[in-house]
Each structure stands twice: as structure tokens, then as C-alpha cells.
Figure 1 (tube, rainbow, N blue to C red):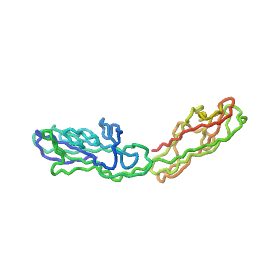
Figure 2 (figure 1 turned 90 degrees about the vertical axis):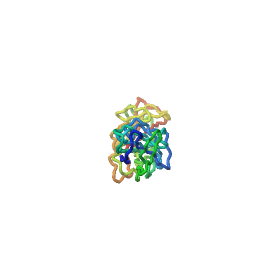
Figure 3 (figure 1 turned 60 degrees about the vertical axis):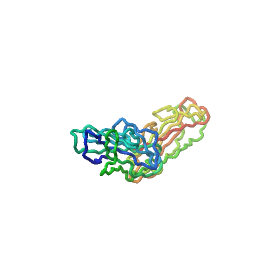
Length: 302
């Protein structure tokens, strides 16, 4: 947002003129985390203000326009300048004017970034005034703000709604059953595939797309066949676990994002991803014992 705060006539030989801003936030706390080099394009690290929505903060920058100096650069509104500027004001002044008298155009631009500070698990809303800006004149090292006839400009957020963009995905336990050692006839032999599904519950509307990825938590023994090694709780040998698609005829690609085609961006809803799994003989012989493994499931939202 940009705006002219005002203009006035002054003696440039005696006065520095500038535009300044301050935060008017309430009800939250400043996060100790600095936020990159934006908003704006300056190399400033911005403090983050925690809003009333858990996991959501905002960073605010101000760029002063001061007469012949033009725009003077971005400053973090949440980090007061100090010096000749009384806390909590930030901004810039300019003495580079032509002539001894004249009308100076003063103003400024705000930039605001919404920052994720933690997991966002609940829907929330924040609004209201977050900053103000005014004119200032410095004479002999003393600054005067809120000049006669000057009304502060306000930066207001109106009804910013935060909606968690995520489906609920409960853990899944797949029981592959008990099998006799004699059932395994040689390397590449498999047991009957067990059907299971991953539930995507309460997916919100409004997302562009949903994708998902499944990664092995153990060593991948055969990437082409999607066979993974057993975990440390297992004593069985010569066998791994194979992950298949819902038809049971094709191995599921591990470590690769797959688009979920059933999502309705207009209505949201609950869905399921059908899959199958089975034991896969990896050695010339199979040793008895528990045969367990695990995989991680990751959702990707746009």
C-alpha cells in the first residue's frame, strides 16, 4: 500500500523533512524470529508479530517518500530507529532539496507479509489497524512529529481469514498375516497382497490440488519393485515388504509425488487412497521371526 501523507511549505536550509511510521498492534507478542529480507526488497531482517491466530504472524515494512530524495528504503516497523526519532517511530528524513523555500511532497509505502510461525491447526481471523504514518521535521537535531493540520495515515487489515489447508490423515496399520517358511519358494516370491487404504478426512475446499508421497523409513531394497527392508524390530531374514497400487498389479512409486485426482476444490470432503502390500522374498531362503517395516506418508497442498 502506498500513499501521500501530505505536503507542506518549509525552509529547506533549516529543516530536514521526512515520513515516519509506528506499529499500533495489540493482543500479540513479538516473535524472536527474524523474517528474511522481505517485505520490500531491502536487506533487512524483519521481526514477526504473533497475531491472535496460533501459528500466524505478520511482518511490516515502511518506505518513506521525502521530497527530492524520493523513496529512501525499507525499514522494519517493529524495530524502532531511535536516535532523533522517538521510539517507536521508524522512517527517513531528507535534506536534499533545491531552493530555499518550496512545497515538499511527502508520503510512504507499507508492505505486509503473513508469516507462518508454527503449525496452523485452527481456522482464525485477524483484522484492525496495525500501523500509522505521519510527517516529521527535524530542526537543530530536534524532531517534531504530528505537525499541525496533518492527520496520520492508518494501515488497516480488514477481515484476514486464516484457514488450515490440510486433510486429516490418521496412521494406518497393515497386517500382512502369518506365513509358513515353506510358503516362500525362491527369490522374488510374494505372498497374497493385503488391501488397505489411507484416509484423507475433512479436506478443506479452496486448494488448487493435492498430491501425496510415500517414503520408506528403512532401506529401499528394490526401487523398481518398491520393496523395502524390514526394521530393527524384525528378526526374519530374506524378506522385505512390497507396496502396490490399489489394483495390486503395479508397484507404487516410492519417494515420488503422485497427484490425487479425486479432490473437489469447490466442496472439499473426505477421500481415501486404496493401496496393497505384501511380503516379497529377497534372498535365496527366508529365516523365521517377526517381519515389520514402516513408511511415511506426506501430503502436498497447493
